[in-house]
Length: 155
Image (tube, rainbow, N blue to C red; front, side, top):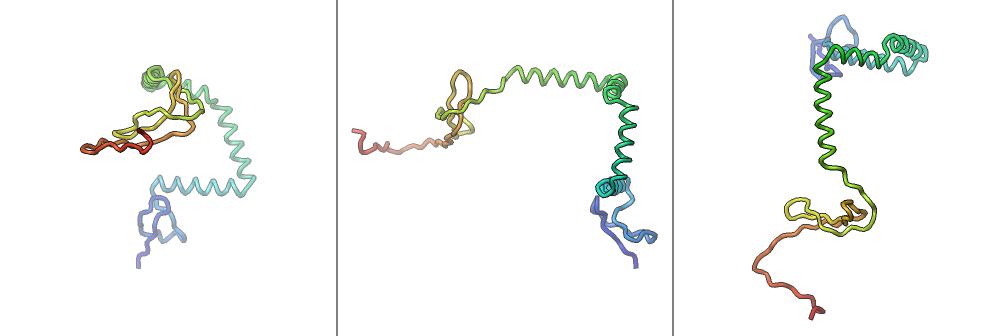
């Protein structure tokens, strides 16, 4: 009888390899990388020697390949990346200049500002600053063929 297992990373069902006792991951590269990363994390957590080895290895690599040098070389070898980044930054700068973010100051709020059709939020606005602590939200609907209701003390 052929036994199967469910891969713990991708969740697919596969035929079990008879040479492996407790197979939990399929043979795809993505799932094997996930298995390896999980095992490495567990080893680093439980073993201080493993943690020290990893730190030493990372330090050697950082000393050999400083981050600013890596970025500089990458930009030199990928001019398309540099140009795209410049264009996107220009767009972000234009958006930032068009609509400056409102300044928020805390006081009581009561000035209707439209939110969506028929709904309003009340904020007090002074000198182009939003002044807000409590917001009153109201929904207004137009109704026809209704007589106005006068309060009893309004005469």
